Image (cartoon, rainbow, N blue to C red):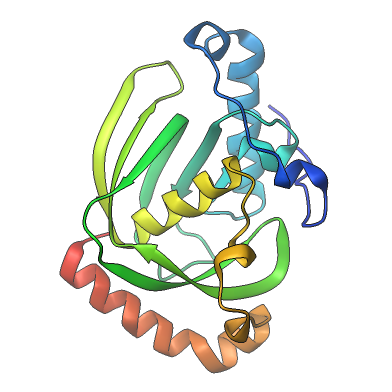
Length: 190
């Protein structure tokens, strides 16, 4: 395994649309090594997720995991999940305000409207089908990562009036956001 460099906003790779991969390509040693590197890089950077395109590999693959994350102590735990060729479908119209940051956009946060309920169809790292409905912050995390696969960054969807640095988020916005998130989690789960 290796820790890879994470592309930063402004690099053209982040604006590419990632390509689907076949099961045959997925199970190759090279792609399995990429998955391992993606997970190690995400964990090293204390991310809640990381898309392959963020480590300069424009394929439709991302990793999501929330353990005891110092960047996101308010996020419910999400077990390590690898999504290959994900398709997201909103379940209903309900949305919530998600205050997001990104490893490719250092020291910036902003509020993005995300669907509360989301159907996720994908493969896992071995090509087994995933078909589940996720809710709340977990759904927000999935939407953020899959946006990367479509050449989108959270700043494209955020209200620019809500942008803040991490320090100013902690000082002025975190308490209200955590309260909102706790209410959402209590109502819909993760």
